[in-house]
Image (cartoon, rainbow, N blue to C red; front, side, top):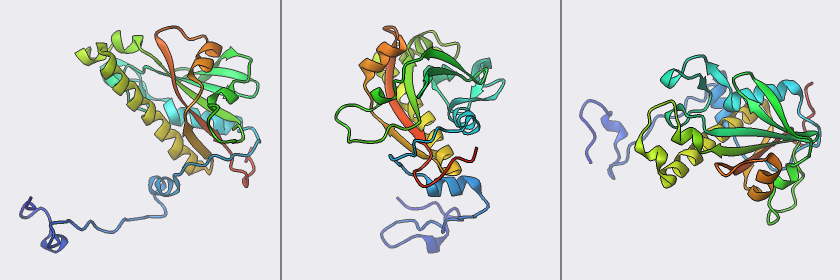
Length: 225
């Protein structure tokens, strides 16, 4: 394929047809580039609980409401979803119990006083210290089939539904990774005991646990309050 004349400088085109991109800006004052540079998976965490300030900022960055009116007249969130259906529920497992994150009210609703964090690590996974915060991603399929947004046919097809809610989960998890990078936290997206978690969370047949993500301070860094 030949590059369009007048669009790509001739010196950027190699003999093989490759296009040489300009060097990255890497502006140290650009926070988004700094976060992308530091983004990584870190499994080991300090046992120190996450401060309430960091937990609050983490949850809002992951899946909070960032505008009153988004697509189809519904509130908009920091992570996109199919037809703005917001079909993913975010559960927060802590040492003292498990909560459901209410993005609209930016608050945590208690679900159980049981510590279910260990269930977020499947038996086949290597021995890893349980993080102080484990985010559990679950889908409520009814929000796809009964969406207030554009009711396209794929929302009623189980295979298409699966592609939507897996992608939408990944968008939230990506936000968590970038927030962790920006704040110097450790984060790890992983598999989980779906059956065990669904039982403890009291989910019905239309709700399914998908994945989990552990977050905490890295072993070398203390909490900043």
